[in-house]
Image 1: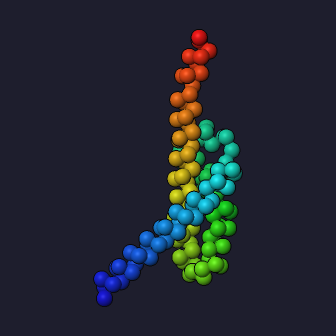
Image 2 (image 1 turned 30 degrees about the vertical axis):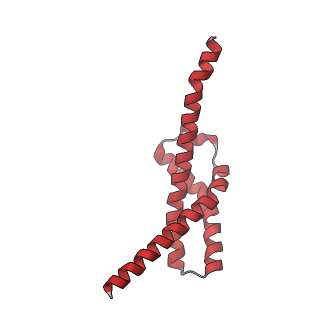
Image 3 (image 1 turned 135 degrees about the vertical axis):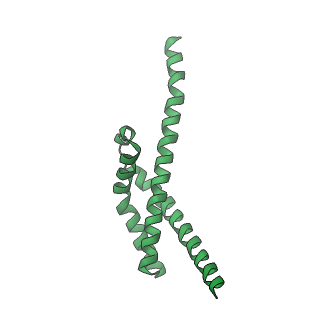
Length: 116
């Protein structure tokens, strides 16, 4: 019986994680629209806190929709929200780093064009 309990919990954990990733991806564009350019001057902890503050309402609205649509338990919805928030932060930081790399990579080319 303990084995079945572990398998069931593993499946639930996987489903919760999958749902959290889905929520984060659905919210990603709206969250990105709420971020200002000042994020580029922030340290990593500051940026994480800033993203968390800007993403809260967006994620809460999506979690509320899921909770009402699926009728999942409140504790499950809270867990999905926590994981979705972390995934949203991860996605936003990743995009910020990619944008920084693209900007840095194009700067030497622009400087060479000016020199010529």
